[in-house]
Amino acid sequence: MQHSEQGRARRQRFQERLHVQHDSALHQRLRQHLPAAFNQRWTRRHWIHATLFTTIGALLATIVPGFSNAIDAPLVTHSTLALPLPPLRAGNPQAIPGSNWELMRIKPGQTLSGVFGDLGIPSTTLARVLDHPGTREALTRLRPGAELAFDMAQPGELRALRFDRDGSHRVELLLDGDTVREKVTERATTVRTVVTSGEITSSLYAAARKAGLPASAVATMTDDIFKYDIDFDKDLQPGDRFSVVMDETWREGERVDTSKILAATFTTGGKTYTGFRFERGGKPAEYFDITGRPLKKSFIRMPVTYTRISSTYGMRKHPILGTIRGHKGIDYAAPTGTPIMAAGDAQVKFMGTQRGYGNVIILDHGKGYSTLYGHMSRFGKVRAGQRISQGTVIGYVGMTGLATGPHLHYEFRVNGQQRNPASVTMPPPTPLGGAELVAFRAQTAPAMARIEGMEKLIYADADTKPAQAKGKGKG
Ligand SMILES: [Zn+2]
Image (tube, rainbow, N blue to C red; front, top):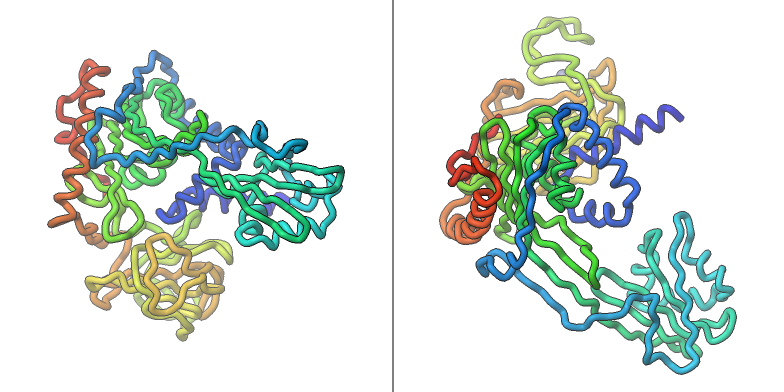
């Protein structure tokens, strides 16, 4: 039991650390569906910071009303669909006379057939519903708390079923004999751009809460935007402050998505860090500093989390061969099965078995850089030749080949020569240039102006040009 709990905690920490860009949308969605898990995380992080600082003072925060109207056009895309719809529970006033809607809310652990069973609807009817195109996917995805509305002709006889296919589409299935007809209504969504700012007195999370910044947005800031430059568990001090420009999605009076941070600044230790969301070349959005340099580093420091270095780079007596020779890599001891991540964006150059290395993967990062990962127990879901992004799980720790215990043998190579990954100068990521930089500047200038304007408004000592005080990352 203890063991599986540890495993779960480790997996959770790993998930939090991993946080690859393409995963974050999914995470945000999961967070919305898992409020309990979310609060747990909030509380834990909150306490870490709360114990660091004891001063509790007034917080300066504001949401500038009407910002969305004031901001320059390139920054925001407003999408407003004009068809407001009553909540699922309210029923439809234009419904067939004599309709008898019953609302069911999915309880944790409850299955779809369980819900149908509770209403006495035969499983043949459920099968007919699920056979309707597009229905099975939507209904089997439903999370606890989701609502289904049933129109019952009489006990056990389903006349119509209403559910939300996704965030913006509501479906009504009308059952008539053997035929199933579908009616789809669009749900109105509004995107509103807001600016908010907070100053840390007790903890980041307390400050964020007072600034109206939801936990999902705080997570984007700490785990996506500034994680390479700021250690949020150690660096924060009372007086540090942040400002955020973000898109909020509203539906039927409810704020449903706040994960899209367009711009953020974070001032800590006298330095102001900046992060701007920008999409290029059809890739997922990335964050850049105000000069157009990616915030993401080319290589992550360690390709495995929660480990210890069992053998450093340099001369040593080989534990199996007994000979003195150079150890051209770093060994990270970790339990068998610990996920191994790609240190940087790469192409899988080799994947297979080599004498000594056992199951091994070599990644080509371009510009003469490559990395090698040995002794894997098994490979991840990658194949030779595939392009993968930083943080992709390429395999799992093991002890195949010449190894006395489970560990990852990691090599960092420059032009084919092994280098010590702990001391080699990592190549800086390529900054934006040309037309991309022009587009980036046009997009970021208004957001930065908003942040500067607001900081001047609420902080007496606000630097008039936070952008110029921008600090370099710690590397
Ligand atoms: Zn080794």
